[in-house]
Amino acid sequence: MNIKALTGTAMLLAIALVAQSLRLLFPFIPPQVSMFVIGSVVSATYVLATWRFGVKYGLLLAWITPIVAYLQGMLPIAPLILITGLGTSVYVVLVYVLRHKLLWLLVGVSALCRMVVLYVGALLLLQFLHITGPKTVPILMAFSWPQLVTSTLGIGMAMVVMKRYTN
Image 1 (cartoon, rainbow, N blue to C red):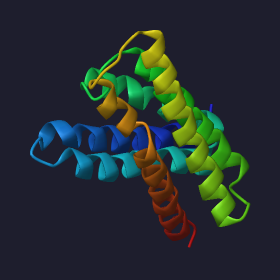
Image 2: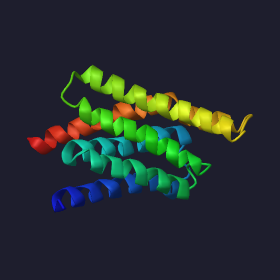
Image 3: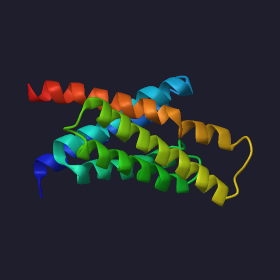
Image 4: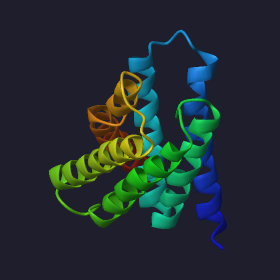
């Protein structure tokens, strides 16, 4: 067992969970602001865990954080844990595979694929569960283009941290 990777991942998990908890600690922050700021920080932890310690550590975060988000009431139905975990797993694998490629390819492919998996997965899940009407709008909105933004910003933040860490 790699103690350095385990403790580093635990620290990144702590950062992700504290970031997710900011919604509860500061409920007056507008949801749009919290979605982009918190989502970007959490995305950065996935990327950092993956680049620094390997895919399995990024995947660990990818599956723990949606469980906590559900427990905090940020995911309205439990099956969205699965969709979020799958979309983020795709993101983690792609940021690992494409880490040495052109920046636009890394960002474009990984962020776009995450958004597509999340949106299509949420859409199919809602249809399967026969959840329709206005209550689907905020779910589908949260699983659409904001994911592209937070995934992209997460990679950018991770790049800044990695650059400072390695210098």
